Image (cartoon, rainbow, N blue to C red; front, side, top):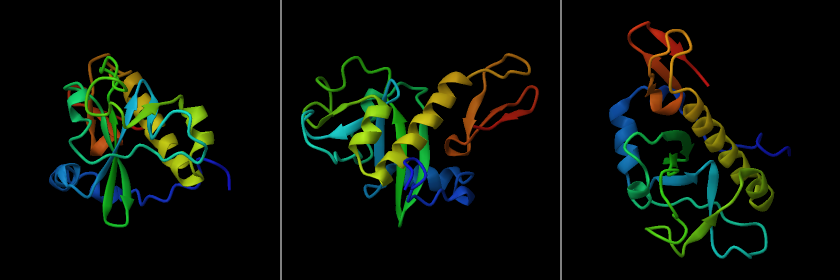
Length: 168
């Protein structure tokens, strides 16, 4: 199988527009969150472990204190009934050594990490990196130059003034 094509998540696009459902899943203790620091995914365990390495999916709330007020939190999809999100924690100074992730794992360049995790996890981290990178690069409307806001759990940006919609 080609890495990045084997994503096992149901993207549940029909649920993205339901902000109440997304918020309830974001706080649901059975959901999982992948912290992304400067576009690097979090991996569990010691840095010198042999592959396959486990993707650093954590429970909601664990990494929230590392994210800024405007940090992107993207709904990646459903693994059965369990929701999976990616959270941009790039504003954190040193999340590997200070804070709630200290001692749990490490961040690694996405290309390197994709070679260290299972194919299914490589596809999930590829989706997470692509969407967070897109949000970091598209904070302003190319039509009118004003700030946009994230919609549909991370799959659309909108600016009300010129009514332009932007999609990844």
